[in-house]
Length: 239
Image 1 (cartoon, rainbow, N blue to C red):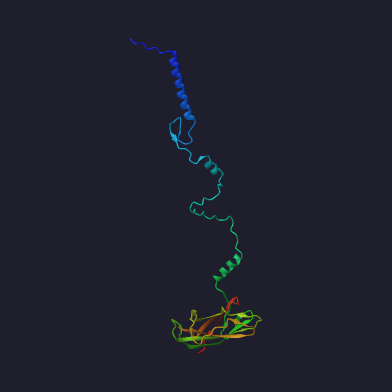
Image 2: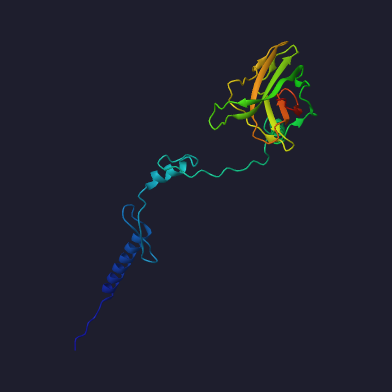
């Protein structure tokens, strides 16, 4: 029989060696390496090292949070928010009134005979100097020569200021149903002068087609833009 006897000194040496090994493992867990991966003591997992370093973290903390990154592409524009109160545009009320007035037909004056003078401005008059049935000439595209009505008018400015006639209009209607007549581009036609000086007169000639059955009873509408009403003249056309 072989008997092994361990001395107390040998056991003591083995205990010291075991203690030194445990201390080395504790030091390895508590002091992580700055270059290598970090070992977690509880789970044994590995954490990647911080490549940015302390200088990178300090730079991020001191950076302006409102500064825009120029490397980023264009961002989508934010939707425009409606203001709490809309501001009134200067002159908006006047524009609104003008818009409403444009949708309404102008007022018409009382009808007068074809030989009566009517207002053409604050101190101006218009009179029909001649109205007669004639043969119209066709000089424009789509026009047809044939029966027509010639209307010659005279406008006299009796005021001290010039009269604007650039917007003056003459329209002709036939019969009780007011069938509109088209103006012909006749060589005898002549427009009013665009501006009429004080104490001056201007004449104009208009040639209208007479396709309607009743061409003797006519209604003439006249306006210059310098009066609030459209002037109406009605009667029979002489042959």
